[in-house]
Structure formats: structure tokens, C-alpha cells
Length: 439
Image (tube, rainbow, N blue to C red):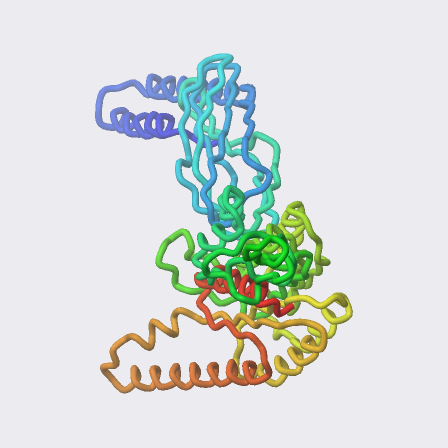
């Protein structure tokens, strides 16, 4: 228990009143009796506070939260007696919250409900340790802090909000929503779909001459993209994925490159599942994880559960070891999309890994580019330190480009993109591979 401002004011007033004993004609025993009365009153008020029952508190929050998205948390506080309570939810301390703490004036045998906004900024398991209450004594002479409510654990997943939006659209339209630029190739693909009448714009190769001669009108063969192919998202969990870009909005300011990678991997995986393909996940470098490719929209839940607590570690990624492990696990030919940050010092190890994967798979390397470097190159140079900095950045970007060219010379698809461009780039390349029948 702690003394409330009212009790402190009474004690200060009583102490100042003692001066009247020294300098005024006030009996000493009157001052002493007044002090004793204050003490007895404070003891009685404190005893009543200790015996007061703790309010019952319940929390309503989803068990699964998306990263970086504000969610509403509802608290219900129920009291047997009339009292004033200050409420503070013991949420994960680093998460930004709006609407806390709250002061409630509770009537006897009633409940009060209020909500506040909370934004998770880290994936994985998180816990609410209860709700801290500050109770006031009946005479407002004391306050006491108590913790009510049961601890509660939640899981923070990669941001799956875009997936709920995509569910309302076709795979092609959903692809356009993420910014992918698609080339329409009507009626072309690798799997036969149906016969139909010739339409203006059909290729001559689509015409079925036997069917045309029988029906005495032009008949075209229509194909669709092959289904039940394999896509493996291979994500780097090493030190390169710990980088963070200065985001233009506050909502994305805490996201590391790896968080952007997981969000993009979920988007392309969801669209691939909608296309009828099987999707798997392989994480290597720091934390390791393997999810074998599987079909069906329920597979997106398996990918979420497997990846929500993955974290990049401050270790160097062994690309060759990762490629060897994936080659042993995934025997069927697949499109392997490796998402990392290519540096010139990695190129020998990365080339060896890619050549190993190319023996069975089609490989695409998505190399994340730090936006801070692009911004630094756009700044004006006014002094020698600025010129040295600009020259060093230009040299680094030149070496990075050379590393990408080395990969392309080995027939590897390379995407050089910033983190916010990654979902559209992956979707666009995946659909291009499907349309061109490269698998």
C-alpha cells in the first residue's frame, strides 16, 4: 500500500499545525490528539482496503494476431463494491498501445467494459501477464496495486491480412492487387483444356485441323497452365535478413527484411495454392524449418504455423549446406525461390549451391536491396566525407550488380528488388514460369 495524496496532505498539515504549539497559544495535547485521530483513521482506512475484494478482470483478444496490424483488446472489470480503479493491461511492453491506462468508477455489483488498441511488432509467442489494478481506499487515504486476471498467451503470425482480401478474387486479379504486371496469353499453356470455336487473336498453332474439317469451321485447342507442380520457398534466416529499412509509414518502421520476406512468401504461396500447385517452405541459415510441398488451401495454415516464430540469427548462411539439404528433402522437380541478400563475398558459395539445385530444380534468386543505399545515392554531395561515402556506396552497388550478373550467366533468374516490391516481383515471376511452361 502507498499513501494517497490526501493522506500526505493531512500529514503535512498536521506537521505545520505543530508550529502553532511553539508560537501560538495552542495546547500540546490538542495537537497530539489530532495526530492520533489521523493515525487511527489511516489505519482503519488501510485495513478496509486490505480486506476489499479484488475486482474480477477478463480479457478478450484473438489467440492469433497479425504482425504490424492494430487490434482491439477488450477488458471487462467487475466489482462487488463501489470503488474507483485505475486499470493497466500488462501487455508485451514493447508493443505500442493506445487507450491505456484507464480510470473506472465502478458501482456495486456491476461490470464495466472498455477497449484499447494494440499493435504487435514482433512475431512469435507473446504473453499478457495479467491486468494491473490500482485500488483506492474508501476514504482515499491509501492506494494499493494488485494484479488480476489470468495470464494469457498469443501467437503473432506474419501479416496474413492480404490473404483474406485475395480470397474474394480470382488468382489473376489477386496477382494484380499486389502489383504484378501480367502478360495475357489467351488459351495458351501446357495442359489441354477444351475445344472451342476460333477467336480473333488465336495463334495458328492452336487450330485443330481435323476438328475444323469435320465441323467445317475453324476450331481451336485451348490449353491451361499445368497444375500440381511444385513450388518451394527457400528463405534465408541468417544475419543478412536482420536489416531494417527506414519505412515511409510508422506502421512498417519496425519490420526487418525477414518479416517482409515471410509476408511476401505467404502471398505467392497462397496464389500458387489457388493455381492448384503444391507449396513447401525451407528455412535455413539461422533458424531452420522444413514444410514438405502440399496442395489445397488448407496448406496455408500449415505454412503459417511453421513460420510464425522463425527469427533471423546473427550467423553467416551456408548456402551450399542449405542446397544439399534441400536436394535430399525435395526429390521432385520444383521451382525453388531463394530469398536472400546477395553480396559479392557470397557469390562463390551461392553459385555452388545454385548449380547443385539446378541439377533437378528451376531456381530463382530474389535479392533484397537496402532502400537506404538508394536514398544515399540520391543525396547531394557537399563535402569530402560525403563524397567518400557516396563512392563507397557506388562501389558496393557495382559489386552487387556483378554478383547478380554472375548468377544470370548460369541461367539463374535473379530479382533485384526492395522489400516493399518483393511480393509483386515473386508473384510476377512465378506466373511467368507457369505461362512459359518452364517447369
